View 1 (cartoon, rainbow, N blue to C red):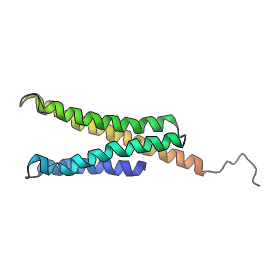
View 2: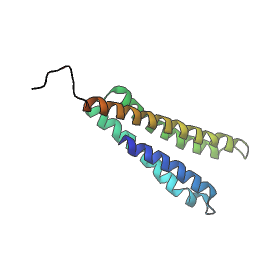
View 3: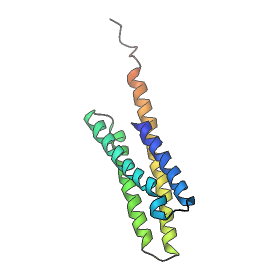
Length: 131
């Protein structure tokens, strides 16, 4: 699931860039970007629940929840940027990209921790004699 989250985050950047250069109206050109935003919120929520049920390390659960929280902040930033005029709006909206980088960084940390955890559970305990 961690790799899927990272893939979705990378795709989100792709769709944002594609929407930025599209000649279609904004609501149409950013439609894939908006839709994937819901996935970026939902997937880490599911990951956090599954990790909690499986009694995974708390940092892994917390980072999954953090991605969902940061994704919620994305919506707030986008809405706040609509309010101010032509000068402040784009400056506020720039935080959307910075927050997106934070989401990518946390998703990368989740992938790294999940890989470390899977390696440590896959390795046999050499201190115990074999039966």
